[in-house]
Length: 116
Image (cartoon, rainbow, N blue to C red):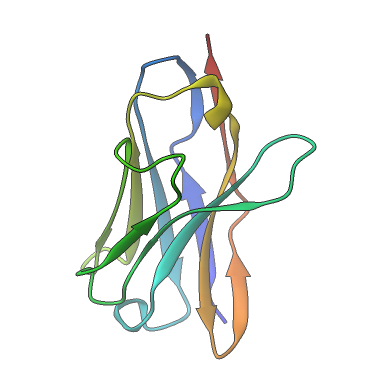
């Protein structure tokens, strides 16, 4: 069971960029894939991006592919989400996720608000 803490959200204009960070603890960070999800008001939580335990493989939702980049720093036990060319439809609370021993851990989320 891991502990996760997101940061880096905030207001941004359409076309702008933000970098989200997720600090991890309580588990062997280098041994697990890490993911980002988001939840917009009135909608279900949806997958955004995932990075493999090694960092060699990444996966993206179609809506963010080419604009968002997930990465990880094993020395800092941190996973990042670089978000470029943001759109109003990217407005959501962004959550970091890890599945350890079949159990999903989530952070508290960080709000991203994109204005047109």
